[in-house]
Length: 82
Image (cartoon, rainbow, N blue to C red):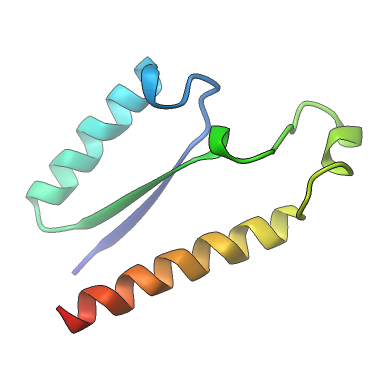
């Protein structure tokens, strides 16, 4: 099975055109048998507009990707047991 992890970075989150297009793509992928998950970066305290802002994050960008990978790995393991 194919797994697709989508990172949606629009400041509008779930209410914008970016998400509408992304969800259409993911729905097509799901209809072809893929398992999908969307991570909305708006839900996290990430402010990439300045280098100073990155120093104020409660976690580093590397930690963010580690958390995302862990969440995805958990989903994959859950799917294997179904």
